[in-house]
Length: 121
Image (cartoon, rainbow, N blue to C red; front, top):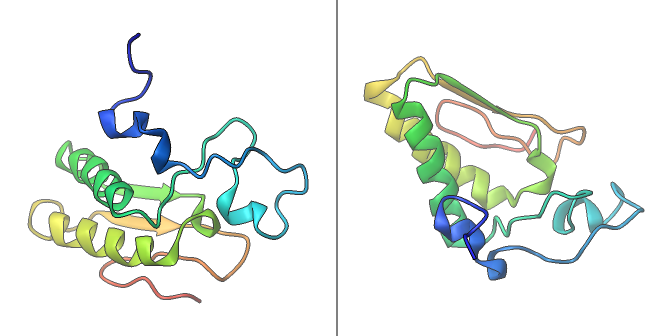
């Protein structure tokens, strides 16, 4: 059977929370560690996921994409944001210095900012 996801690491089911969908979403734990409808929830606290997502965004930046808006901020581990935004900023500093990254959340507990920090607001 052909893998459904690319890059290959996205096919590893151990990199997902695999807790299913809670109809009580967005309240409580469901907001950060459960699937959202039919969207699988990656374990953003796992270094393989941090590295993989950083690699994907770095490749997009190399193609000339100059901005990213991520609307899932509250569903992502905060330490992920710290490393992810640092890596994207470092990667694009010379090749694409006008690029930007922003993350949006309806709650102020998770955010990412550019150019070099990720601080909760």
